[in-house]
Image (cartoon, rainbow, N blue to C red; front, side, top):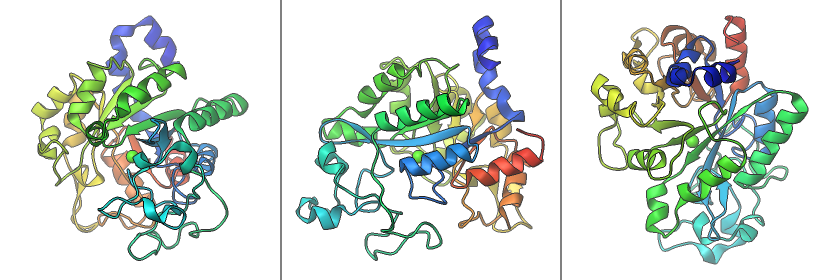
Length: 337
Ligand code: CA
């Protein structure tokens, strides 16, 4: 339906992105990462079957310039790299994906996220570390998986690729965005009518993706309350009406941390900020990150409570969540699916 409207009335394209508020998007953060190791294909299949609208891909490059799906530029928090290639760490103690060929990365076993200093899981109640067998997928493998599922399951679940530290990649002599965008286009993700949002924390790169690299699809700037952007600017600039109007010139949405949407140390003193209404006035969608059942924001006492505040009160347009099933359930129960 959306595609038909866009084809007939391309001038309403920006409006249509924001007009999704009545049916907010469930974005599976690193897949169904509350249940299976993050960014494994298994976690993506589970999120797909839980009814997520979009599946997220964090992207970094290998030494041979293949985009792979993982959250950090380092390998040691989600794989057995330290055991398998102990001599390959840099002087700072990290094992960089960029120092390994794809053939080497395919020899690694992926696991639930650990704290590399202690070896203990970051989320103790999640999938057991070291159990079963998982790999780090390439972007290509994941896009093929989602396209195949869309064919066999008769749905059109979207993708949500994040370019991780593109400035750092360029310092190292690799151009992450220039490698990734042609792959997205080849898979049919080209315009804002296609189910793909490209996201990045680096504002200069978001501008470059739109201008120099000519990306015509949906584009979102990630930012966080109380922190600085990688370019040194203050994140709060983008939460002001002036900042949002500036952002709307080159992006379609903003991805703030949850703390920029709702403040407060407890349920009793929580407060919804003006960010969503200001963003909607600028015709920007708002997709905050990240809701976790095992790390609830202090202002919520349950996932239902958090969903009510974010979807019901704050009226966000989409949510990054480690537990997409719970968001789908809440939205279904409240007539928003
Ligand atoms: Ca991400």
